[in-house]
Image (tube, rainbow, N blue to C red; front, side, top):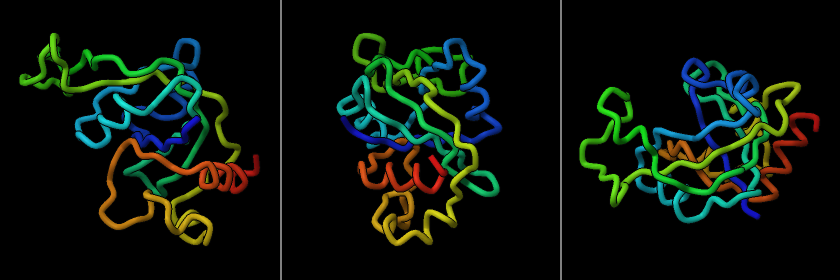
Length: 154
């Protein structure tokens, strides 16, 4: 099993939106970074645990736990000219972009903010806090995952 952190802007898709989704499940679409795409396509597997993180808000924070429930498949939004994630270079026969399905496991009782994460000595090597790392999908260690859960009082 692997552990991941996925970022979403709460005004675009929040943990509350996921909680309201059918079966509390959604596809994780719109990833348009090759490194993040490779994580989705090549490494995310059913049963992997995911920290859901709200970004581009005040304060940015880890807000819940999800689980991968469907492995990589072509991101159909890349083929739709009316979708904001449309990529005219992506080909249905040889897709460029992929997505996975995630299911809500638990919303945190209290968010774990980025400043709190940065202050935790056990999380100093986490990709999230490293300069220049803006990936929307990134691996985290089991230790980092468990530390965030502790910080969320779980």
